[in-house]
Length: 189
Image (cartoon, rainbow, N blue to C red; front, side):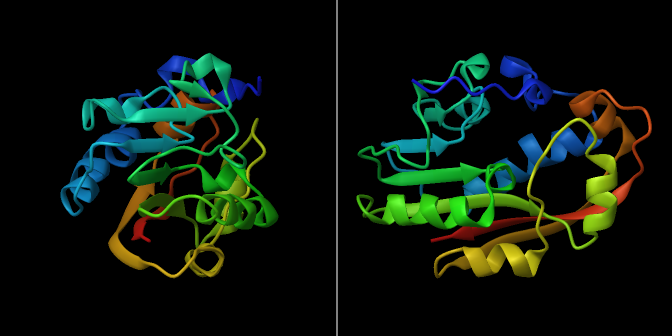
């Protein structure tokens, strides 16, 4: 059983911070994105963390490798197989290197016949993102880099926003964060 723990994610409190950036990326934008697609009965949230999507899709099944987030299914999404009509991959791809992103989609393609919704932020200013991301190791990408890793898809949502100092204080416990621009995109596969 996987037991990976991302301490910076704050376990079951992940994404529930009150700053403007967190409200936008974890709540407001998700509500708009989900309104653009049909949500079937059997939906999985890969890398679903603490089940934050349950407030929008009560029957969604969260699949995550981090035991501290108390997912419905504790498993590695790179190898997990399940019978779902829709798989949502939300704010996960920056945890994976390019090889792992390709492996994830190859695994999903091997058994999944339904739709996939990818919700991911992009950073065309990678220098600022990395300078702010103290205490974590992630794989941040520009819009172009992310798009090249995805299977054939349609972009159904795109919004620029400011990643605030308060976000970095809440997420990473740092007081030296500097505001910078990011882009939130949603892709339907």
